[in-house]
Image (tube, rainbow over the protein chains, first blue to last red):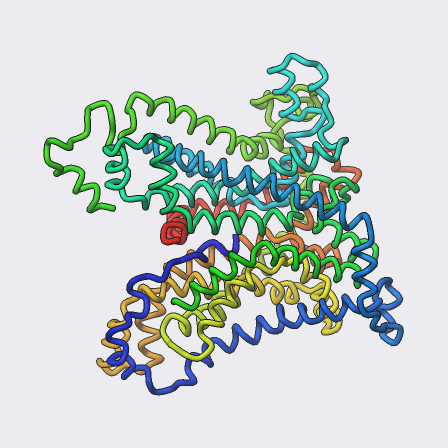
Length: 326
Length: 301
């Protein structure tokens, strides 16, 4: 949600190069002005972001692992990489990481494929149908993650749940009628949680990808048809290159959303996710605030940031390049 | 866009599209099929929301039946009564409203200044600032909550709405700077200059030219910040501990996991509907602007 408008290509009107000198006349006085303008943002972000980040690193090298150490600062000491060794050698951490990676792979792939398909679909439908779809999607988009989790728990409930009922109606198999989706955490996580996350992500992705597709020049599509390209070839060679930057943004965003999934699981499992639902986000929360292992939780946080960085590094490089061109 | 469509209309006869195909060579007879698929998609996507609206007005008999009814056989307000008589519901709705307004107003004020700086000035560190605004948005909030918890505890803002407002600036400010920047860049510089030539001070030019022209951008950005702050759960859940300080999202998770309401899906859906209503209403009011705000970002990507 938060990086919605991030991947803008610099507009042509943005900072015209040639008449720059002439324009400088108005702006040359008061070089301090831009610094005054960004000062509040910088101060606030240092306070609420940079400082906590530093604190996170300090905490990761300390032994604040119970409430006693929190209340008695004299007991706190630095333990070097012991915290990291402990986390990296625990099976729980690796299981959570594995779950997170699998879940992310599954949901990101499904999100992008479905968003592309429905984006293409919206180009082929009549206007009224498109308005219907976009309106429905806008409502879905407004729904908070916690509400999504609560509603999906009800949809997939084993008594009175509508999904069980529909599956029972379709298959005629009585077993579906009271099927418990959450008993097996694999089903719960990779089916129910995945669907809940996907449902929440599709509005942005479908509307955005469709909007990007409308930017594909119609002449190019027509020309490719005249040259005898089939539908797939046209998509691959004409549409895809145009929407690629936005597609990269969508993939990066989906990765960010899905890798730190928390709210939906929390609401689906009624504040107490079982072990099988322990993705990294849940794990670090339970360690940190559930059992007061603050330092361990800080270590998990740092490892999580590093894992995300490792994947996002290519995307960040691109983003920084955009910032420089601008 | 408009140009290319016009271009297609005045094409020489030899290239005119055949009757069965539209401009892009798609078969017209297929359109009803695609329309049907699209409607099915819309129905599936909207169904959870329909279910959230329909469940709380069902009677107890409908709610308890093993086979769900897709249309209520009776009408009942009992579920809504349960929600409104919960002692924490209204205070928590008020809390989230205050926190959201605070985070949006502060985010817009601080972010707007930053956006003016990057859109209208060239200065050392500008590129770094822009890149930082983007990278910052990728830091997982979840990883920051533990140190935030410590810091707020130390400065005495733990379990207070104001602490959460400050924490929410982590995501509102970078977003506002980045989004408003593109709005301001699109205001022709000549307008500021004309104002300066006509005798406005810098401040006057800002107040009379840039600010009024950025209002649509401020509204769009404000709506997005509102949604993020209102819907946020992780930070609020950790930084607010007492029942009368919590936000509506925290209330909902607590309410749905109590033994009394844990299986009472009628009241849970009533609660879910009530806490999402302010955001839904906001979306309905600003629908056009929000949609164009989103697509504007998407299209240029």
